[in-house]
Figure (cartoon, rainbow, N blue to C red):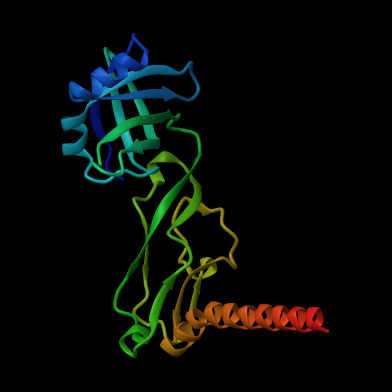
Amino acid sequence: MEQKTLVAYVRNELKKGRTRRLRREGKIPAIIYGHDTPKPIMVDENEFRKKFHTVSENTIISLKIDSEEHNVLVKDFQEDIVSGKILHIDFYEFESGKTLRTRVPIHLNGAAKGVKEGGLLEYHLHELDIECLPKNLPEAINIDISNMELGEALHVKDIEALEGVKILNSEEDTIAVIKHPKLVAVEEAAPKEVEEIEEEGVIEEKTEEKSSEKE
């Protein structure tokens, strides 16, 4: 995976008012932690957006703070759901020669046969938990689903082995299923039918209670 460089600055003032002011000035408050004492920092929002169009837990960054360089992952981040503005980032510093555990996104590629025949692709997993050395960390797990048929399920055990990468999910975990549209329609209708049956039962019960009261 390509590693990009980002300049960061030590953040000394930690009050809420100062944090809000930083955001107005175009800075993102952040923290770096790992094998050393957690350090409050900040990064330029425009620079971050230019270099990282998408952010996930497997985004590797070479973070420059003064004269020091830190290899980090974006471990977590907070985003404003309305504006899309990044409010805070947690950077996790790792050691290059040691294995790390993180999550990577799953990308299903190709037009599945089952979908062409009218089936509906249903996702069960969007990410996988993996363990590997930083140099082997993939940007995503790419899976070709072109040959998937109607009613067929894709499991973790169906993924081709990736060099230097250990998948931590159960082999039996389902990633995706191509369902027949009729089956989906039945599943969607089922809760309503159950609700109607329950309602009928309540009406019958109330009717019986009223009859008993009259007697």
